[in-house]
Image 1 (cartoon, rainbow, N blue to C red):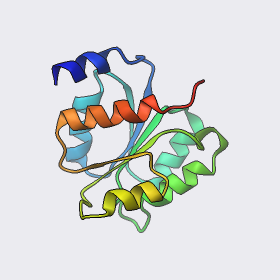
Image 2: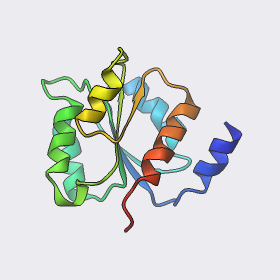
Image 3: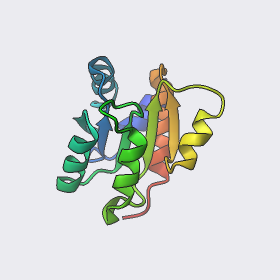
Image 4: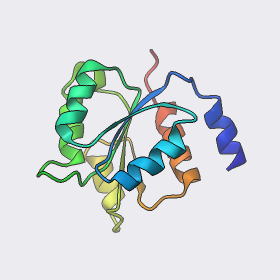
Length: 138
């Protein structure tokens, strides 16, 4: 974890992540794990996330798949990809769906990376670092 923390600590402090998660416990955990290194904003629903994305610029999306209310994180990703400024923004699916083939399925939907819940803090940091390293040059 020490190497990961050192690497994450050197990230651009202006790197903005929109986390889309409806579980308040996971929101709290993600705030705790990510705020030291990133500017973090949280959305609960697809509509809230789309409104935030229209008003602010984000460098990465961390999206839960099962968001309730009939719309999923996949629906959100597809809507974000229709916005010209987010066609190439890294998106990571973060979900409890952890059956064989789920990772590949989410990648085929257009996510850049995938992490299963529950995850270790180190896994999350490494996944975000990997996704951010693939970010298009500004």
